[in-house]
Length: 121
Image (cartoon, rainbow, N blue to C red; front, side):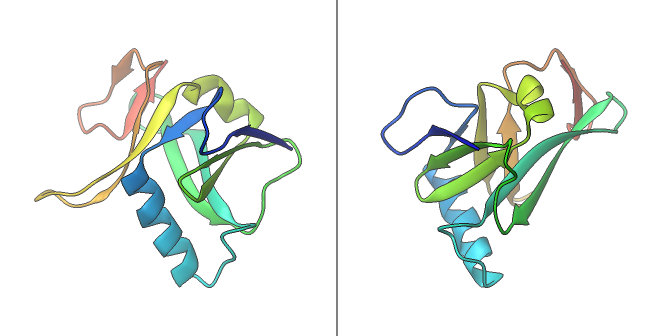
């Protein structure tokens, strides 16, 4: 298990905006999970018209080989295979007329599908 970054900075797999962290922490707490151990798992999976898509879920604790990014009170767990696709990405929370949700801004993406739900690196 490795800690990739904390609130003081350093090398990161993912950068987390303050708004994304606040929203995720509220959701984790509403699930009755301990934010000192639990976190948001961010992963890449096969699927979508462009080949890859993001997945997110809450986990009670990280796996032994996860990168753990801690910023703004949120722990994000990233498995080794997903790290290859999302290194340098930014996790954001966006609200608006089309709905609110988490969004990954990924500098490794070379193309996305029309709906923006899947990508190719």
